[in-house]
Length: 302
Image (cartoon, rainbow, N blue to C red; front, side, top):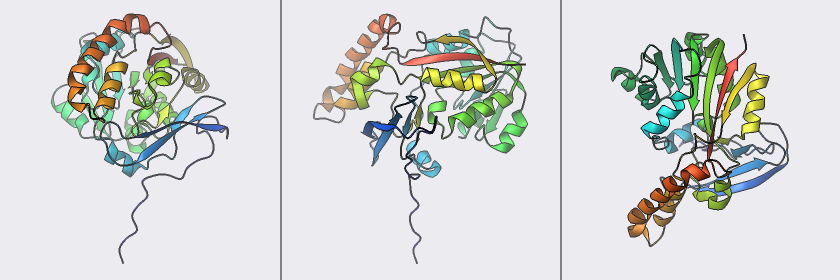
């Protein structure tokens, strides 16, 4: 007798995974715009805490099928700016980059923190290739929340970075708890996330690149993240909604849209123009509600 096909979605939930409220609304319905794989995906939003989440959520097995590649690698300048945010603090002896992939961030951060040992954890074999290429001192294959991985990393690090990582995780609260477990007392968490309150999300709708369905499972408002970190024993040291802005809202939306129409042959030249406009407007937009990302530095209490 043939086996029954395994479901690709968890059961749909009727409450918010962040605060438990049952006051939900549908924020978005979208196909897989990036890879054009089959299916329509729903993002619900909590009317009480504004947490947005994929509902129903993909199963872990299904997520691996869609998650062929993470988002496009940020520019070297953006990665350097992220690392530079830690310069006001004592130079760390050890730094763990979570969801490091090919370890592009540690490679750039090493230029600013020459005496820091950079380790990486990632569920894909890319982390081992990054170690072989000399980008990491230690490579840990698996999820940070896995008991065997976390047991090896407990209390080892002065800095743990989670850069555009939480939105990909099934249980972001558990990921934060694991990151704090890997930190030494007094150590720092460095986080960057897409900002679901960005005005660009309203203007561009499903074409706004941080939605990235079905790969992004959670979109966490800054207020929610800050309150969660404080409840888990952190002090918030810095919040930045300007420099984490990534200037590609217009160009990505243009490319995604045109490549799905009869105008696809014009997508290349028009996207180039949109990219120039993204960069020209970035200094002004990053200071407004159109900024599309935020950064938080939190310190684990001693």
